[in-house]
Amino acid sequence: MSTPTIPKGNQYFDATLYTGTGAAQTIYNAAQFQPDMMWLKNRSAGSTSHILVDSVRGASIVLTPQTTTGDQNLPSYVSSFNANGVSLGTGSGGNTADISTSGSNYVVWQWKAGGATVTNNNGFVPSQVSANPTSGFSIATYTGNGSNSSVGHGLGVAPSLIIVKCRSTTSDWYVYHASLGTGAYLKLDSNGYTTSDANYFTSSTSTLFSMTGSATAINTNAATYVAYCWAPVAGYSQFGSYTGNGSTDGTFVYTGFRPRWLLIKRTDSGTNDWALFDSAREDININNAKGLKPNTNGAEYTGNNYHDLLSNGFKFRNGDTDTNASGATYVYAAFAEAPFKFANAR
Image (cartoon, rainbow, N blue to C red):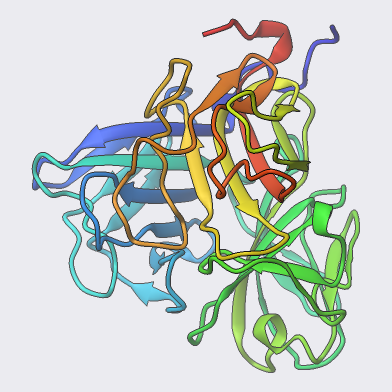
């Protein structure tokens, strides 16, 4: 096997667990990198929001993935991105998650982009971008123009996953996935299936993504947006689709690495929640499916979506409709713990 560009996934992405103390604390990542995006969830308690912050908007500016709420300036949640993790406060205000309840269990997912923000003029409107072509991840902020438009992402290859959120007003989270094709989208804050609209995500190229003036949710004139863009990197990240079989001997999906983080959504019909798993919360097979749902504020659930996280992919072990209904189609996003060349079986 060829040596992958990224021999250890945690150089650019990590999943970290911690227990709340009721006080401020610093959360470290294993490879000692400075993250540019952090997504956090209280695993123990329901009715607590996911929170997402990034270095381009600023560490104190909070978004909540399961709501339509725009930017909230809440410095008591995340005070800084550090050379080896993030510093958390005690959390207060807004419709956000708690991050410090004594005895509660939490998970933090961290991604490394490109650090310092630069102006990107590849699109029809300028964007402020932190891009890391090595790991295939960029963060771009832009202002809509209400007309045919495009936004530069800085990756040098076409993104396979783009998540766009309006920052300045209430709006859904719009998700482009290459397996759906252009003119189609999902909503991260919804359990709905694929919507086709030729005005949304009209193209995804090596320099930019595009939309028309009718794509108001991602291009309203004078509204501000953030776009999280990922391109696949062999041995580190993969974005694809599969068909479920409804069986305890479920469909095997090859990724070329042992997954650390796995996000799945049914796309063909029904009202199925997003499903999010990682090996930090349970690292043995058969995985007892300690799942979280990005479109809800529920606590971590167990007992559904049994699956194996394998040295080269993943495989489901029951017919739960969120992940493995017979004949249903799904899209996924996965990030590596270790590439296949260096991965061991669990």
